[in-house]
Length: 386
Ligand code: COS
Figure 1: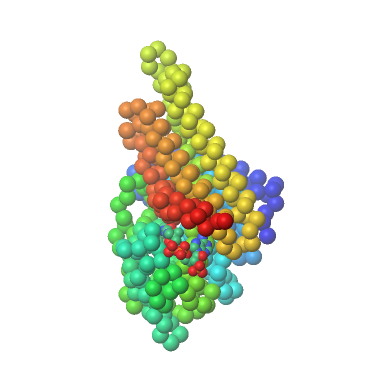
Figure 2: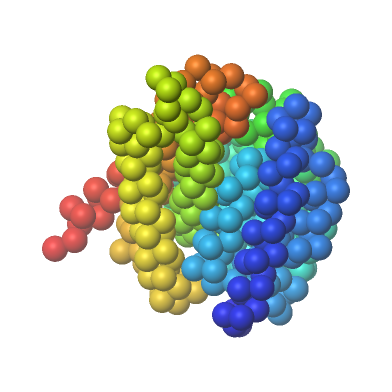
């Protein structure tokens, strides 16, 4: 069940207020400390943000994709580290369990994921397998009623906070068909974390390696109970995640445009506001036009996503999602670049938000599938279609 329009409007208004009154004022603290304050995480729980996408029967809010994208857009208006705290619970960490998990797995994990009591991460990437996700090497070998899991996962978002991982490992032969998805509790013996990654931007977002050395994972934690389905689970989860991130990219592009506009109205050169110069207006106009195009694209693709049966794969929709991720992440990069340009020298100085947003948005073109992977998904689909 999804929520009705009026309830959704009230929720969106609360999120908009939370972003404006709580998140934006805390951005400098997050940048300086590399931590999202515990009080803000608590408020996120109280607002229900960890359970946005989880159905109400499991204690979540049960938004559809179009509604989720609207809120992702609002959350994208603050430093991206805030959204990242809830990002894996709303998206790539939880959705494999929701889409393909057994009733028992859903009942055991989803309520705690929805409340935010349990942070869940998505562990696919490895030192030698990123874009080529079907080549992962982490092994899960059946031994009685357990699997012995060994390998290394890399750049795992929220791993330092996670109580569990949705983790892809190889139970069979090479290629996509040999991959299975597991729910791996963080506390199991043999599971250790690497040191926190030092990143270009998005301070306050936590990523690190996850090492597994003979971790005994109960067979009951194999998602869906059938081996060999993990690659498809991961791809379906990523389709959804990519659309969510496209909305985030639009939110951040809008924020950068607002910062740039405020600066263009206030900064004076040659006796007038720099925004009165047509060359500056051209940059603002390009950003506005591209933002409108990207955001309209996300809304349209989200509508189509909601039209397909929940949890089902639809190559046409996957292709459209890839278009959205490709366009919106690149668009946010261009808007950020113009934002720095409009700020002039100030845009290169850490006191101005655009300096940090410029670094923050760079990740949007890389994670959950690079721009080139999105191009491959679109291109391959077009060549297949008659
Ligand atoms: N939904 C459901 N199933 C999908 C799917 C999707 N979006 N995309 C592919 N599949 C299925 C295919 O239908 C195929 O199934 P069959 O063997 O039954 O036909 C299987 O998965 C393998 O698909 P394919 O042959 O296209 O796989 P490739 O190895 O060529 O990989 C790409 C395809 C490159 C698109 C994939 O590896 C990918 O998305 N890589 C990027 C991974 C990524 O985003 N990493 C970021 C880190 S995670 S935050």
